[in-house]
Image (cartoon, rainbow, N blue to C red; front, side, top):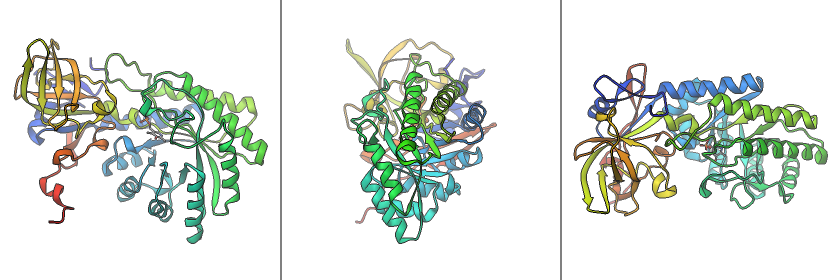
Length: 433
Ligand SMILES: *Cc1c(COP(=O)(O)O)cnc(C)c1O
């Protein structure tokens, strides 16, 4: 009914997430509230892990792109389900480490890693660095040398593949701030640099062509370009590439316009493309990595708000104001992202009213959706945004000194706070009066 098996309607006509009554959870924890179906996340993580090993073999891993939703408990789930984790900052690395995540399964990304972040990563013994550019390679080499260490390096390359998605989430094309381009020869030269620097070990190559992609062709094309590049590396330097990472980007359903494929279908498609390209060039099979972020968590999450005022401007539109907004979900103001909304206390009823959902922040653009369908709504109702598990909490801010919501996970009939609600004391903790 809602495009995800996490959501259903119970006998009282209430929305349920992972079998739990959403209005009851809102009553217990207050709003705004992020709810996530832990059972679904675990099932999806295992589905990714099983699918890549089934279609490619044992020398393959799934790395959760943790920027999608990064909290201590989430790293624990990923560790328990056998996944690796991508981190893009010292803060994410520190959180994974504090959660007891095995550091040899952590990979550090980022287009401008600071010396402190590189040192933290070296001293934590992470699996490998995904390095972005020549300046950074020299810096990692110098910091590793000072410590008598050798850093394992993947090179982030731009395969020059176009994916049809929002400009801000497109990353594989030549005009991108991420990585070095294959087509200019820069990437092949950078491999030579890795091989020259004595405290770096060349491990492999990495690309990530974008996010919220539904087509299969760009993934197949990326596999082709990357494996061609592996052959070019072998031809020029006589070395094999031990690891190939094709990034993330699988699309999820936000509204009925979106029709994602299953995890099994996506992974099977990618593995088939990789195997065919390797065979065509007679290359030994590298360890294959993929990095799903959004598709691991987005459909598992919803955000529950309480409606304040409902303001109808005759002949124009109706604004429904909620007790959250761009502070907990900046995706509409950033990308114009579309969502579905519903009233969890009347979830079985038809969505007959067309409204604009307005956040509580002091920006006219602070909306979550315009001209969206919802059940007839009045002040005091609960209101949910669906599919908010990815890039919502992790992008949340304290603009207007609004405390961030609590995050509650549900599984097997139990609910558990995994991030507590911020307090006003939290907000002033670093202020010096
Ligand atoms: C963001 C990102 C991902 C995850 O992308 P999704 O669209 O969330 O699956 C994977 N790899 C890299 C390098 C990224 O920057």
